[in-house]
Image 1 (cartoon, rainbow, N blue to C red):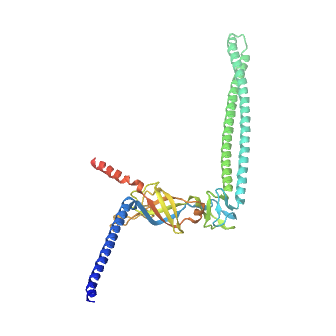
Image 2: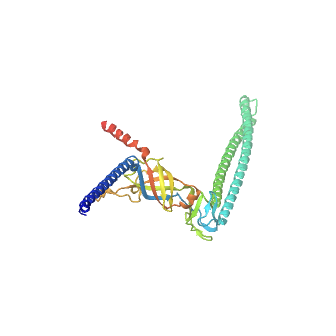
Length: 379
């Protein structure tokens, strides 16, 4: 009995030592596992993690087109409804074309009047040219008569001086010569007047041609206005925020609806300025959509805005005033998202996203920039 009581403390001590050794081994194993995990995590961060730039300040975007009316008038027909899918060239709104049909008819009538005026001017030119030909022929006949009489006067003058011809006949011949000379002058004046009439008729014809061009331009403008009464879809997409109604009077430039190009959506992610150092177009992107939490979308960096969001604001901050506080700026990055037709039904503009960009492809950029700065400093 005494022997059993003597060995019990020794057994308890041995058991405690065994437990301590086991706990020590477990703790050592845990520390070793923790160290290995920490080393792996550090390696993963140095090789991958620090090159993955993420942000939750990202949204689905689409460059919607605002549909406005070029002309004023009453809306006769609205061919589309809210949220309807439309194709490029599809009729959206028809404005009452009655007034514009009337203007087109008036412009066409003005073109016809101008052409009739031009035809009359062409006829006047031909008439004036005929009168010019007559005046020229009459002048030539008078010039021939004058030349003949000048010759006769020259021939008879010595005969009269010698008494071979009577003085009375010579005086009559001189009078006829002077009359012929006056007739030549009159015919020359008539020819000049005929030429002036030709020039005047040609000027009227030129004016009529200009009137035709002006009337044709007015007709083309009226035809364009008439065609514009049919407002067509400039792009394909979905109709959104339609405010136009049948019977409504719209003003030129008034907003009627918006077409959202659902096939041309993209992502705009705003990254901190500390994240874009290695960001380049073409880098892969992973996108998480709040509306589809179990689906990962993939995309590509398309472009980086050449300035921060504050730089393009309506009133950019002026830090030279003295009340400067350093705030980390954000730079918008445009991302092309790869999504099929079913996904695009859900990815409507304005949705919130989480974006992660893999910038590992630009790791060598750091060394290139460092070497470049060293070369610049050496100069």
